[in-house]
Image (cartoon, rainbow, N blue to C red; front, side, top):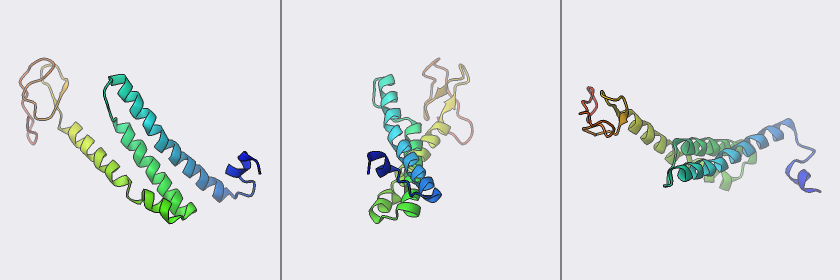
Length: 134
């Protein structure tokens, strides 16, 4: 048996092929998140975890969980991905809440961090719309 046939046996059915593609796609998503994080960190010259990292983590984990449940059926593999999606969703919720809490400066229009009293770009005093606290 050569190396190619070890990974892609000739007796695979369409079902086998489909689930192996799901598994490989999940691995690709999960692995690519490291390149996204590395690129963002190199670009800013400080450690950065971009939102795409969390989306790739969530997508890769869910694809691999579906693969493990529907095709592989190995308990260790299923358990390994069964709860990994929880912190990814939590980080996405935190990210989008924080993003929504930003205030737009009435002077220059730039987004200002939550709870800011003055715009860090132009110095204009920020007045929060109802429901938001500067």
